[in-house]
Image 1 (tube, rainbow, N blue to C red):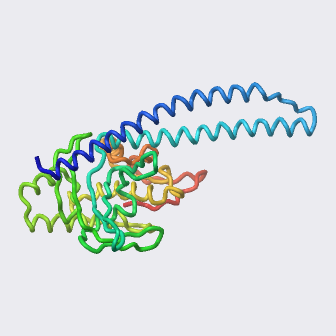
Image 2: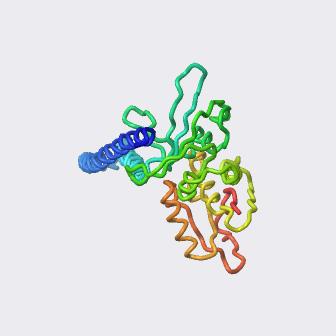
Image 3: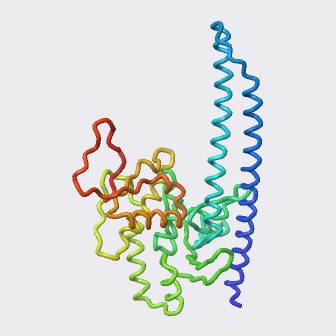
Length: 312
């Protein structure tokens, strides 16, 4: 067997087992938390004795109710966080990652392998097992630059040496094939074709397409971004990737319900809801996929028009 294939398969098996363990821990945590929450809320509710007979009694009653509400909010937040993480793990169990880059972060330091997937996850020690494709360091995979390259973190430029770009075709815990390349290829069939016939011409075409797509996906947020391309050039795919990228990069200020994608028909709507779920867009459930109206649509005067960036 190819020693590299064997080495990567062993790493994949290790990561997959970690994901299974994380899923089991999260399932246990959800069950335990629900029981604890029910018990605590029942006990606290029984301890509240509403008394509005006077000012002091009213204040004490309201304070007790506020404490109960605070406990409920805390449980709800922890529950939502756990469910969201469990969703990421379920996605990664289908395909833990699709690429790897080997980076020399600083001269004289050992190189670092970064595995890139549809979502990011860490182990119990907070060590990254898989890096989200939208994270800053993953930009080195899409830059199409071997050797010296860079990425932005909190507005600061970090320069690194890209020593290896490796791509994988993975089904759950099985490594079907790997391919070392100087370009970022997202299509598994194209990946297999290049493994059979690695020509400079095909490589150059792929590099140009991926580089242009990456520029659009990671473009700074602007009031209007117009993308022009021929049929089949990947505009829709880039659009969905850009939405997911913005939701990840601006997750503290941008929510899914602020993004509107107008589609020509219901089939288009259903198709891309499914595509979001496949590619680890955890926020996709909240994205409204509306139907492009047949007549001029006027925003109701009783509602404020959305202030989000229009995507054309």
